[in-house]
Image (cartoon, rainbow, N blue to C red; front, side, top):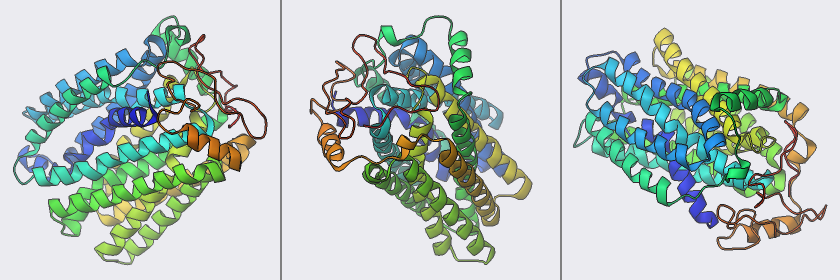
Length: 463
């Protein structure tokens, strides 16, 4: 399976989260009017979906460690399609909230298992680059989805949007069944009950101080991001007067900024190292968010407000994949559980923080800017302290010039020496050696079916 195909398949499957929210985001005000409910409850339809996406990862992740990646993924995608149709016919806000929660639970399989598959196949800086490539694909969703949603708002109501989501879910069933091969062979799976596996893995992962610190930073960053996500349609349409179509274009441009940040990370991580790229993104995001708060309090016009939002999101794209890589790096066969804990914490924090802040202070530009600035600044502080004190020295080491050239050649689709090459089908160890140590890059083993592990908090030595 070539690198391009793996990236596209995993990216499409990971798009459950943004797809579940961004496609109908321009319709939130109309949804509130249609169901005769408040803006806060309309926003809650996003929050409960995020809670489902978070909690569900703690179920889907361990299931994928126990039964392999593919079967739990297919079940999740099928349920997502069915529950999208249930959302479309919900008669009341209460039924819609319940259906959205279950839709999030089902969609979590795509989010967590796609990251676990990436961790099965890639390691070290190459894992950071793969996660950045996934961010490229998944970032296209919040770029395209609101634009499509804004145009669909011209000809259909919010219920029809959920029927569209159901159709997309059916298409993704075929992607999961025919586009992805199992990346965790029988020998690499964990025996015993799913609950036992979850508890055992979680107890190990949560004793890793670097993982815990990065998870806390992800919680705070998630709260900031989801405050922006849930309030943006009300602020930009209600306070700044944008139409649903113009809002969808602005939202897409902001998502494009986030995509650009992720791709800058992919390009420069080999030169600067994973830890430095993470810290750069965190500190830049905090600076942009604080500037956003200042200009908002000074009454800046919409273009300035939107431009600083774009800078903040670009920085989030720069640091996010590297934080995930650092957090998962020491947990090879526990990648499903570790990824689930990370995703659950981030989604749940965002789902709780955004509606609480909105209910207490309203959906104003000042409220949104304050939430984004506070969450981003706190996340940057914790991330900076954690990575400087806890990250292994090699996590920040850039690749040598020769190793970069070898890795560039290896990452081309069809190249036999790549760290993934045909890993999902026929893993091997015929990779180029490290320029400094002469050690071969770590790849999944044909005999064990799982990548070698290091102790918690100690990612594999970078190639």
